[in-house]
Image 1 (cartoon, one colour):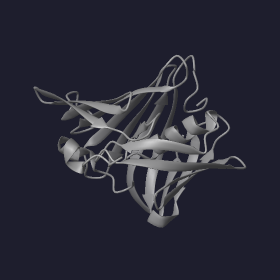
Image 2: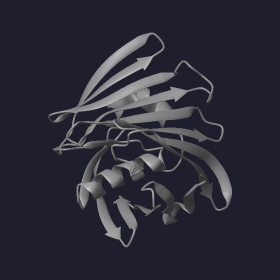
Image 3: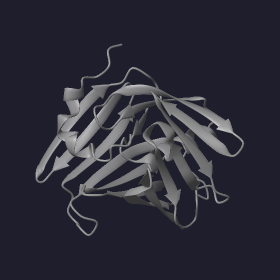
Image 4: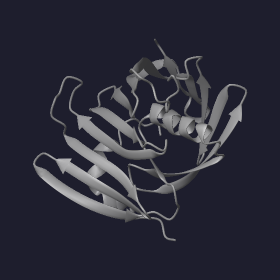
Length: 216
């Protein structure tokens, strides 16, 4: 089946931001678990991301240097499957009105996208060639860790994903190695070390000379 055209989601250009492609992350917790992370490349700080894990959803707030803030929320269904993914793009961390508000939902063999930009609302449907596809936030390494945790809990060694920027589908390979999860997406390898509370402690991306480190 032919992959979706990148032109289909052209309004989502704002989401190409980072340059990087809890209790446990997917666990059902009674109250929110939170953690803060720093993005490092060759010793330089690129940005930060705050993570909050609640009973029915996980949320990340990604603030990269000189870029608008990305806030993603991935919802969980009662059967512990993943539900809709919402992404809000904010001009600054203190902004209350989003530049862009996008919701991704899988319905059968289609990815349905609702886009709100200012007062304009549009909807798109993109055919996806694989079942059980998971929307993946390209810019957020912690969202990649969220997807890896979902795969680990379901004992998957492959996770079909659709990238929120460009709507390209791919098959992520997942392996477990003594307390670490290794997720491979194309040529990029994410090595996720888990803390005792089930949240990521570090995420290493060797081919980008990058590391995401938990601060608290």
